[in-house]
Image (cartoon, rainbow, N blue to C red; front, side, top):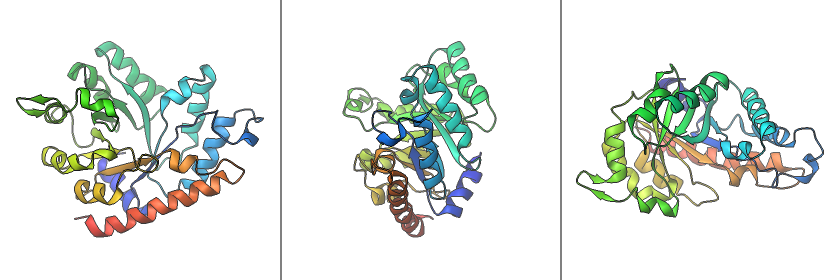
Length: 271
């Protein structure tokens, strides 16, 4: 899926919502636990309830790795169930020297057929470029995250500005607008306008809306470009909106609230 195809889905659904499938078997409704694959059944019902309202799904790979071999099987089944017109993100935060990154890319792009994978830029270009050799696949590079520890390195001053700004300037030369997105945490909305000065046309994946309290309007006003340029992720606030038999309906209600809010900001801020 290229940038224009993703934008067309945003216009069609009037949404730039990404639903995070951060599914913890210890948190899903108890009535699912007797099923053969409770995490997959949970994901399946969440997807059924929200697929009309979102343009992307983002499984956090750690939740599946934690279950061992069974978790990888569940992840593949979940990926196969997601409608093909919805963008898929392997939130894996990989990044290693070239040969290893090449194998990570093969795992998520060839064996599992994700549309994109999150990657850490810390080891530099040779840890990222193996992911960029695949057609119609994306690298989503960590730029400015919303965790407290982000201040330890990302906000350090350098001769070229903050360290995250140098990451943006340097890495944006590694690939095209159809290959590179960036992670920018929703709780760092004050930085989004500055980020847009450096990378005005790239898509941003913005986690931290919902349970973490990110400001949707501030994100939209500062971050939206001519192709929308935003995928705003919500995980816990949607998938854990209810812990009973009505969990899927509750998830749909929460996703609908966000979609309707996004529709209003598309009308207001899309150039």
